[in-house]
Image (tube, rainbow, N blue to C red; front, top):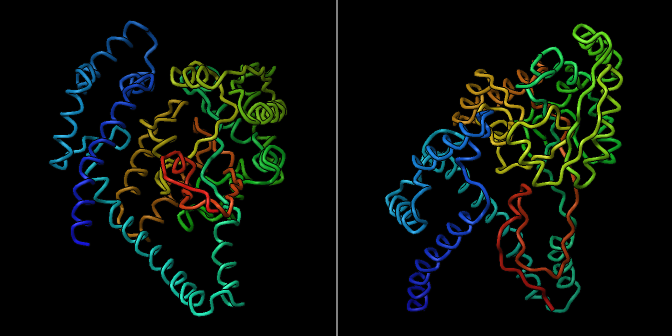
Length: 406
């Protein structure tokens, strides 16, 4: 037995190295790199300047070196505990891992404890009463956990306004759009009610870190009925465009995005903003978003990379957020998001995220407008073994060994 354990442990090292090499190479084969992302987010308009900036960043990051040299440099640092720097949070990756590891271990131990409390008694009952009524009941109870549908959340519908181009470089017009969007109607019609309108954080996903929905639904833009919001939004538009204005409304031609965009266009028409739809194929659309080549993005689902309240803010609201397509920079949002992320006391962290949500929602003129969280059902066949559903959509985009039981 000891020989087997030692052999398996020794095999772990080459397996880990092989996996790291494969992932490293595959990441380099994906079109684009971090240098292009950083430059396009910065909003440079001249192609020549962009290319010089990209080359400079690639040189600073060592991306202009051969892949083999890049890998050796990375693995030598990783062995010493130096995993580099996170460009999303602007601090060492090791610091982020150190903060998250205790919580991950706590969750893993708790999950294992619950599984053992459930599994051991059922196993004993099945063994003692094999092929009896209790055995069958235990089997049904065990299989029910594998065959029931999995209710998942983790994607937020966002509307993006380009804060660097007219007309949405004007905060009054951004506020008018925020007031005009009927989130409840969008969820009811576009999602058939399967969603949580208005919330920046979904209570089902993030518990009490989410601002209570009772408070959220009283904020302008979310309150019902919409009469007061529509009247205020019309005044803001008429203040700058007495005859209304015409804009191009961009959207990806995937899923039901076009249907949602048509609904948004109808809502904006009530306040004097007339939209003409422009559809993009997925890759072309993301390229346009990254370069800031749009006026308004009618709808864009953004799944969370992590099951943590920090996710949506560092992805879509902070200055360096990878999906902050509206390119709006608010130092107060940056400071509040960073402070909440680093807070280790749970009660203080919850209060910090409540303050951040209140600030964004009450401000009402941000370039990233939250419409609502998407909810959906994933069904898993009871014969599928070893499948571990993730808490966010991206958790399931990974390799895992599964098999079908006979």
